[in-house]
Image (cartoon, rainbow, N blue to C red):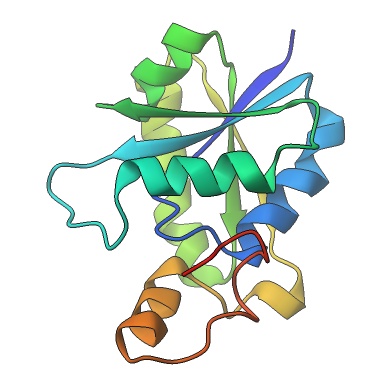
Length: 151
């Protein structure tokens, strides 16, 4: 079974994340959208709320499940039997960062492969970080988040 993990904070999930998962879904038997819990980062939204949003967004996607984990992504992949990581690239900066992480995950994860999908141009400017800033500033984020997200 080909299992991929799409890790992230999803604080909040964006339309770019959703597009990436749905484009990758035909390539795998199962994709696990996994919220990584990082004790060093202060999330804007609680874990349970982010998980609830993800479950709502992907409820009709038969081969997509939602989970969360602490610790290293490569170790989580080993626990769930995933041999692939799914990552999105918006720009050259993303590529440089993700390339390094993928090489480390390949070593730590004993051959864990990373599949990169390039963001569609319509979504390449969207990041959870920017969406959080718009939320903090009281702006309308509806163009950037799935309709299932109620803020």
